[in-house]
Image (tube, rainbow, N blue to C red; front, side, top):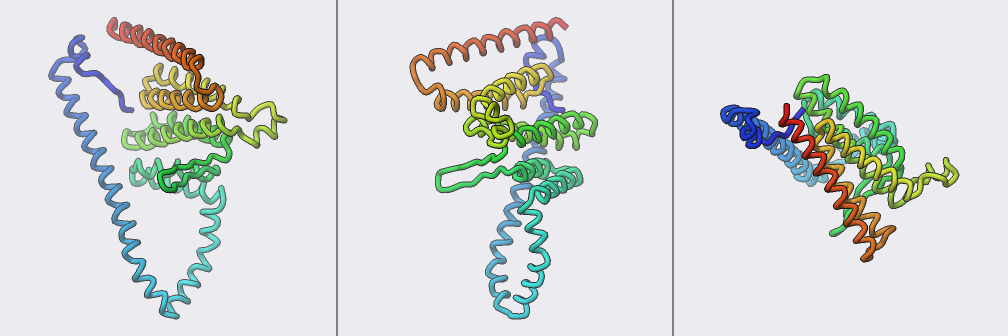
Length: 290
C-alpha cells in the first residue's frame, strides 16, 4: 500500500533524519520512473496495434476481392459470429471477458488490464459512453445494480489486496479505485434520473432522484470519514471531487441558482471546511505526541 508523507515536516519534527529523507526521496523517484515506463509501454503497444490494423485494412480489402479468400472468411465468420454475439451482446459474455481480463492482469502484472476489467464489467451492467463533436455522453441504465455490484467487488478487492505481494496488491487497489469511480458515476446518474426498476419494486416510494441524492451525500460523507481514518488518500480525493459535482448538480437541478441558495451553500461549505481543519489539527497533534 502506498502512503503520502511530508518528508520536510518529518525532518523538522525529528521523526526522521535528513539522510533517511534523502533515501526515501530516491526510492520515490524510482517508483515514479517505473510508472512513467509502464504508461509509455501501454501507449506504445496501443499505438502499434491500432496503427497496424489501419495499415492492413487496404491489404485485406484487396484480399477480399479474391473469391476463395472471401469464401474462407465467410466460413470463419459463420463460426465465430455466435461467440461474438454472446461476448459483446450479453451480460454473461461481458462478465466472462471482465474476469478473463482480471486474470490476465494478474498474469502480466498489468494495472491497465486490471482497470480495463472494471470498465468491461461497467459495460456488462448496461452502462456506456459515447462522443460527438465537442460533446460527451454517459449512460448508466441500472444505477442501483451498478452501485451494489461495484461496492461489493470494490470492497472485496480492497480487502484481499492486503494479503498479496506488492506487485499484485497494486492491481487490486487499481480495481478497487475504478470500482469506487463507477459507484459515484452511478449515483450521479441516479440523482438526475432515478432508477426505474427500484421505483417499480418499491411502488414509487424509493428510487427517485431525491432518494439517490440523499443516499449519495451520506455515502460521500462515509467515504471521506473512512478514507481519513484508514489513510486512503485516493478515496478522500475522489469523494471530495464528487462532493463538488454533487453540490453543483443538485444546486442547478433542484435548488436553482439564487442569492439565498448560494449564501446557505457557502455557510455549509465553510462549516465543512472548519470541521476538516479541526480534525486534521487534532490528528497532527496526536501524531506529534507519539
